[in-house]
Amino acid sequence: MKSFREYIGEAQKSKLAIGHFNIANLEMLHGAFEAAKKLEVPVIIGVSEGERDFVGIKQAVALVKSLREENNFPIFLNADHTYSFERVKEAIDVDFDSVIFDGTELSFDENVAETKKCVEYAKNCGRDILVEAELGFIGKSSKVLEVIPAGVKITEEFLTKPEEAKKFVELTGIDMLAPAVGNIHGMLKGGVDPALNIKRIKEISEAVGVPLVLHGGSGGSIEDFKGAIASGVPIVHISTELRVAYRKALALSLQENPDEVAPYKYFKSAVLAVEKVVEEKLKLFNNLG
Image 1 (tube, rainbow, N blue to C red):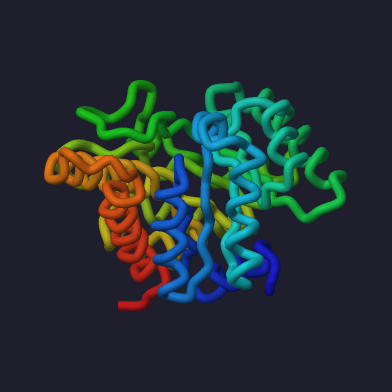
Image 2 (cartoon, one colour):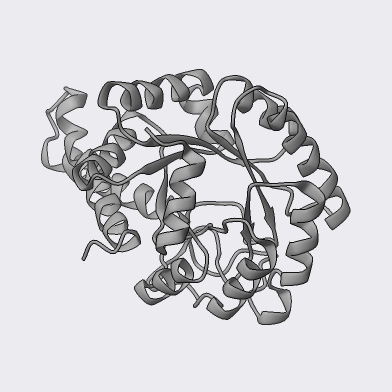
C-alpha cells in the first residue's frame, strides 16, 4: 500500500480529492469506511479534540488501523483541530497518520512559533507524520448555524493572502495548509454556504507549493468543490453534514421503533445515512459521476 503522503500527491496531480470525514463513534466510522470501500477510493477519518476525548485517542487509532490492516485498504487517521503542542504531541505519540495544529486565534508570529514546534516534533518522531496548519480564521464549531460564525470575515480583503501563506509555509515547514478562502466551519441553516474564492485558492496553491486542505466543506456547492479541487485542494473536510444525517436518521429510527432496545438494530439507519453522505461526497471528489 502507498503511503498517506503518496496518496495525497497522486490526488493533487490528478485533480481529485481525498474525503476527510469526522466521526464520533463506531457507527459513523463504519458508515464512512463502507462508502469508501464500496467506491475503492482512499479516505481520511478525522477526530477533533472533543471527538478524541469521547472515542478515546488510542481507541481511535486501533479502530482505523484494524480496518486498514484487515482489508488492506487506504484509510488514514487525522487528529483534527488541535489547539496546543501538548495535544499534537499526544496524537503523534499514539500513531496518528497526520495532525492539524490550529493556531488561527493566535498572532501570525505566535502561530508560526507553535506550528514550527509541532513540525519539529513530528519530523523527529521516527515516522512519516504529516503536519497541517491553518492560516485565517473560519470559525471553530461543526454545527448548523443561523448566521456566519462570530469573527469570521469572508470578504476578499480578510481571506488568507498568497504572500502571507508562502511566508508561513517557509517559516514552519508544514506539509499541508488550510487557508481561509471564503469557507466557514459548520453549515448555514436552510441554504448553501457562501461561495468560495476559487481565484484565491489557485493563487495560494501556486505560492506555497504544498497541498491545500479545504475545511468547512459541509454546505458547499458542487461548483465550488470542483473549482477548489482543480485549483490545488486534494483534501476536503466534511463533518456537520454527517452529524445532521446521523442525528435525523437515529431520531426517526427511535420514533418508528419505540420498543426496540437492541442498539445494533436502531443504529443501523444512522450508519446507512452517514454512508450515503460519504458516498455522495467521495463520488464528487473523485469524479466518479
